[in-house]
Length: 507
Image (cartoon, one colour):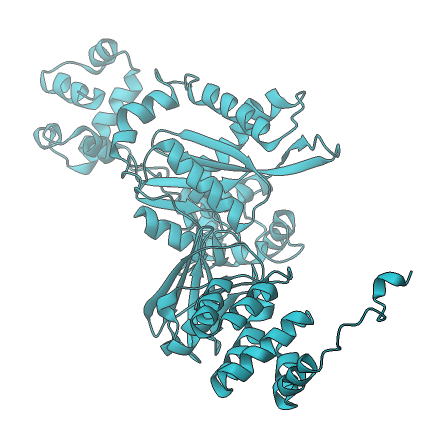
């Protein structure tokens, strides 16, 4: 019961002012002033006793009347002007007060002027106290200061960015070093963070760094495509912090400050010779940080996270996320597109020749879309200048060229002519790259189709005897009827005679 109600009860019981003051431990004048207020306001004691304590106190303590005086009314009428002028270059409170006093000499002193001005600034921008729900958000940021390691092969000091994330409900923290703040490193660190947590929160809250937000905007920021893909893969959403609103990510900012003292400071005298070594040391110190008892609480961050938050996180997807890249190419006449990053060619169905294809590729896969439909999926190949081709994508003419091989030509030659088979055997034994010889084989097969078999076989025999295994030599023999000349020279053989000397007599 409030002291005022006790005073009223004692007064109803007929106690005197001195006795009431002695019982309640207050001065006689205080009792007198309360009773005087009742008489002056025509308030009835039974009605006052039925009121709640705060309402009853308001009846007797209406507030400080100093704010109702004339100089405060004058100050309040100009408060918007003062707040606006403070934003201008070079305008100080001292300057505003001097102008205020020159126009209103009976106004406030400088200290009171600044006090009332500060009160109005606070009232104009109230701050809401956020009560976070478990597994609701994950705050993400990069620390402003860097860590480093030494390249053991060159001795160069490699500077690293430090990725920091925390769950605001439990204040559970994660940190790791990456080479840069580029999209690839940012996404890699975020994936490592979610894997470490063992689940996915409802929303990711990054700062407005370029790896997360393409265009910062208070109401509709443009999210980086890679981060949007990651959010879709993990079944969460991205809610960037507002621009120039540090209170939106106050917890992660506080985590960065704690990491400076609990990680950076403790590792300041250590030397690391790889990024892995550096991250192992960071992980060890972060574990100590999460297991340190929090001030004014009987638990640590890790205990709070494991007990109240981890089981509420969404489960991780079964497949590992890979960052996606987007390109658009025109399908070439050989029904392939070239992924210029690797200089490698991938096939699409021949019906898509000449159309625009949208290519989405990851570290391990290349997907090709035409007219909104996925028409091809390939395993990514890093062989520069190479071709990845699916046989079903080729038309009949292309399949012929695709199926060509030394075995293919040897089989066709054997079914056509023994001499051609022998010529092809010697042709492929030259050690040249097989594809360089396919057009020669095609030309010889055409000659076989357009020439009499006996005449063609004699031409092949001449080419073999002279070790001239090419289309041009055989074609010239047939064109100039050299097969008949060869036959005549064979018939005009010299007669055997004992006076004829052979080559063995010459040295």
